[in-house]
Length: 170
Image (cartoon, rainbow, N blue to C red; front, side, top):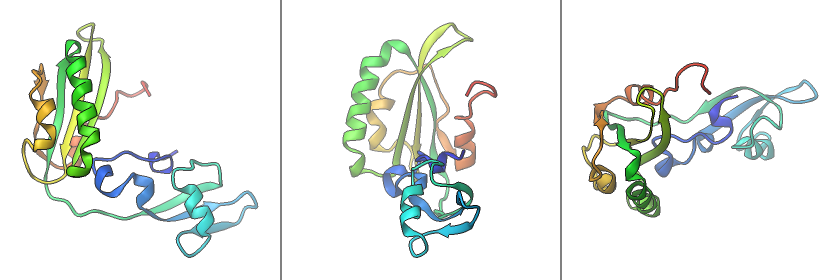
């Protein structure tokens, strides 16, 4: 099942909503076997139900998404020692409480166990959907001492590749 059918967090979520909010049309096979297109004008109730409603209303065989033009983004993965948890939580609360002030910023915080080091770590995916380095929205995160970071100007493809989990673990 596609992440877009159950919500779909993206680097653009603060500005344009979840991936499911940007689906223009669903092609759906209904329980009767008929194939319909659900959009704003055709089957609008089904269209609304499918936006984040998972696969409970039929088998979605295709969907059409709005696209967003973009240039280079600024971002990457910043890794911190687990001892920074209190500062991370404070930064996260302030970031989410103020995202309306800068909807070009995206933060995905991950607390994880590293089998390589045998330690718990914190990994922040910080992405800015304009080609601007060190946007003020990230100040609290970037002021916390980190162990590594990959922050740079890159394409959305390059930045999402860092978030791919190892095969077989999800």
